Length: 305
Image 1 (cartoon, rainbow, N blue to C red):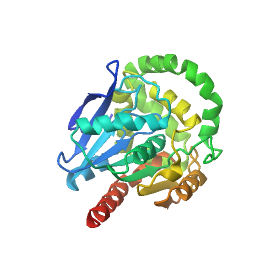
Image 2 (spheres, rainbow, N blue to C red):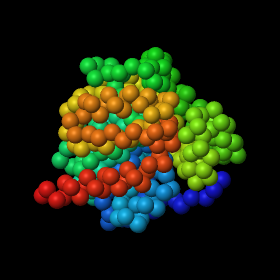
Image 3 (cartoon, rainbow, N blue to C red):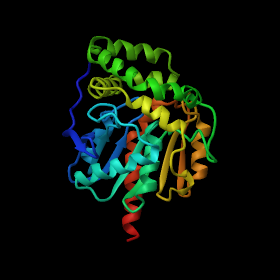
Image 4 (cartoon, rainbow, N blue to C red):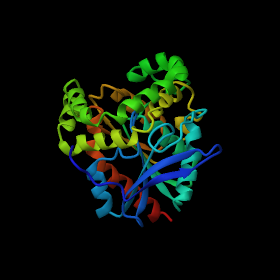
């Protein structure tokens, strides 16, 4: 497996009762503009492309990956809804000495990104989303995509997700020798754009690093996500006033491109970047462009003050 740089700082922060903690990993410039990166489903705090980590160093960005509850260094916990995540994130950024920040979410990180923007419009400067999941219930719902299946299995996952997660954690604890071949096999059955992305050694190394270090302790977060996404999110997408930039591949086989169009149509201040030929994972090739776009929005906000 290709070696990639470890985070500059990595640890966990107390966020609630019963000794709950949220794990984080920090990259880039310690005094730079803070940008929180929320991983996909599945994923963990290190699911940040190597080029984004390097870009953060050279462009004055403090890039912070966050574990959701039940993965990596975060304590297992079931949120009442997606909106509840914002309280934990507020405690994390407070502990890290951060006032204003941007949030970027990949796929399953998208709903939590919008939750943070909705809850903290005075602190979240801008939000960026890559192939984000859309609501499945309520007036803003849209059907189709993998979450169609997710909604179907959510009741069973709500009961069995934690035990399955514990089994997966045990497997991942001894999976290092087979992890790289497994990702290669997955790539062979993926759409062309994702297959090409996973063929890049540094891209594959990022996923392996995230999987082996983020998932070896516990893997309950993906099941928690499925349950949360299948229920009411606890806020309306159309009430998010923070500027949002949305990137979505028009060949996405997991979250259809139509979902991105739908979400952007609901958001008051949003712009959609269609990525021709891109599928789901391959949108991560846009990581540095996303950081630049968010930095531009930050500059625009600063200029208005």
